[in-house]
Length: 296
Image (cartoon, rainbow, N blue to C red; front, side, top):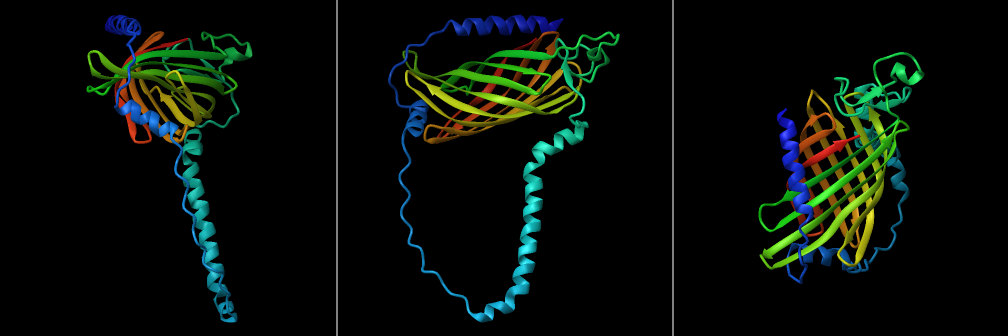
């Protein structure tokens, strides 16, 4: 199959990139700007002069009805806003019919049983005869290369382990390199680690969210808080669509990270391409990404 040749090509490329160990040296560029924002404390906010409190006259009692009506309106608007903000969490389970009443198991790899990746309440899990072999846990790992086609590129990896009980662990890490000349370059490590909960599951869609930490390392380590939200969709063999959003902090900087990939699966392997965007203070690490993901 043609996918196997592409898999061999990507795997050879990834192994070759992992053998490259650049020599770090001081340089002024995007990575230095990133470090400065992470490690520089924000200036104290200026003191504000509060106006003296004002007293209300008895005439304000005539506006009680209007104030009460305005209060009810605000409560209603707040309720609608709350539902809208929470939609990313209640809408996916509703759309796929996930009522949290049936356990979810895993195939050995996507499309093993021609229905995506998960098995919801399979009869085999209850000890009954069947043709499927449900697993109570699953793991996947990826290796990738990304570039902005100018000065910044990176090699990275990701590991995700999850189980039937819906909880899981993940870690994303990458070595980012900025090159100014053949002998002038800078590098650092960047990533996050999170505890996940799979809040929506069906054979063709799994959505996860969780909390964890961001990290930066270049001989000195900095950490911060991270919130993550993402999932995988298996619309039709062999297509795998994945997306992720991260929001948090890193040292003194705010962090936002999102990525989307489209992959082709063949048994235990997947080749994918997509776009990855990291925004840390005034610095961005973003560009095209391609790699190999292995399912188990």
